[in-house]
Length: 353
Image: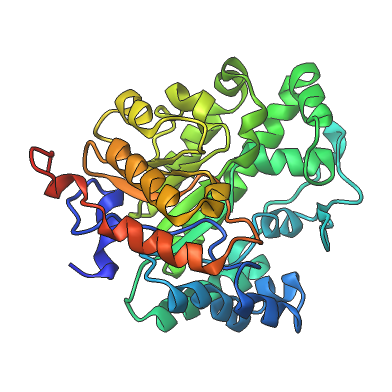
């Protein structure tokens, strides 16, 4: 079995020869190669020029024995394509200077055409598949409806989610309408990515961490179920769902319908697998800052996670969130080597296979 097989086989609950590993934000500032290219081009240039996006995507693949590549882009390119201005300020994150917060303004949001409005993303996928030449699979992605809604309503990275929750609680019909609009937009975007060649799709619901389980069930779950159903009806690729709130919402996330649930670091993966059962794959969940541990401690931490998560086939090692920009490169190399040295479930004596 080659690197080209491990990740997709794990997504589909099949036996693998080694635990597959990739890292959220694996292309980023912790690598000198990325800092060099960012010195010449803005973040948006990297996202919107397909050749540059592919160059950046390949950097960690050339440096480490990772088992999957992920499209270099940003979840807010879809929001921008819906007619909302998005600015990226250095060290401030995204800013939406004129957020639509009234029902009337939200109704004006247009559904983008993926080929016409987001063609640069689709071209990056096509070029990325060519450049990878089957070395590893390529993951496409988009933001989840709730997470995109928070950026739209808060005008950038949320702090207290005040505008989001005020609309959700006080004008639930308007909030529901926004969620439906976003669900359709995300579904269309993800289907187009699969058609362009993405071999798996990850849905980032970072800010679901702000929701109580009852609120997730009431305001979000049905939209996520519909999103997954719409994508799956047109794309035969694994769907991964990631949320920083996965540790508190695990009992509900199993109802979303995704093939893989990616967990943050605030839950024991053994407990998560017991809750989800053997028919849903899991991904995660090393604390990104654990990469600053001494090597011997990091190795023990990694092996414990793999041991607990690998009770059944269908496990992919990842971080519980994106890699920190100041992470030492040698720790990333050591991490990947350590994960690959761990026996996957199917090869353990007595393990399921």
